[in-house]
Image (cartoon, rainbow, N blue to C red; front, side, top):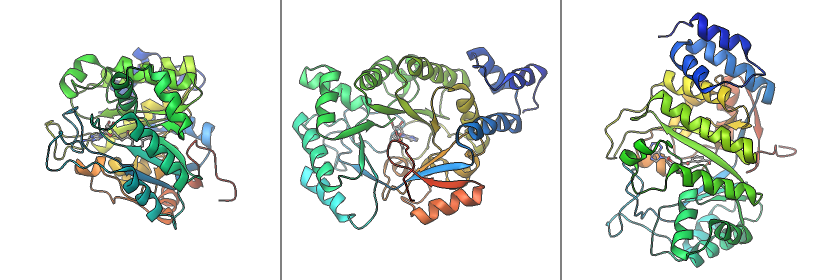
Length: 360
Ligand code: V47
């Protein structure tokens, strides 16, 4: 595979300026060459972002790995009572942020697991402490899965929970927990997790409250390309309604230390998926090449397949590395800039909401 067929060529020739249908996206997935897909996605990303490739000074923080959901692909979460389960106090999290005070950080990315012992007040105090320690960084924290869990435990609406979290300092929701929306696949991959519909509904609520969010798709395991396009279609439909998504992140499945026996996508599949995502999601401004899970070299190539964001310094990533990601746990800004320049793009520092940092 793949020489571009006449049918796929016709679709590519009609781009840009026309929205891909689901069937057309499937035709491209099955019948367009990698080269032609990347050329079309590159033309699209050049129109949106020119040669800029964004990166951010960020710090990843994981407050707990204890989780009542046992997602089959996840090597990070530990069952309650497991000897490997760790939950940090708010004071410990504050100290983690404080310990990096000498480094620039413009985005604090906080995620954990569903630990039923943590009361809602913990989440509020956590945000308040991080906002106090690092007021200049936007806080991107707690996935839709955690928001739904807190709403259920507290017997409050998701809007109520989100409003209280925003008042405590929450700027954005990260894109995690989306996995693939197909109910049949979720039943196999993550049966305890909220449905795709509920994930979308939490994001719709957040957008309605004026909060931006990101979206992910976990791919390269047991799903088909049709499942991926259904997932993209659900995101595009919601984005038409709300306009609240800032960034889409295709996450290549990492096969280590987890209960799923699947291999993970190869490099060509990663690039095809990025390119089709860029072409399909005409209403989402940014696409992230998440170097942690893609690998630095594939992430560099993804900048030629429609991606414009290289994510960040991270300091210490744990979710991908628990599942065997063989990348460093963090990169310096100089390393990120060098990777972007060596890929043929112009590094542009951004903040948590994707605004370029003036004077950077
Ligand atoms: O939701 C879990 C995924 C996600 C594996 O919003 C795995 O900017 C691959 O969402 N292989 C968390 N992926 C990470 C995430 C994220 C990362 C970077 C930036 C942003 C953003 C969001 O990691 C989980 C799950 O989908 N995940 N296990 C695995 N074995």
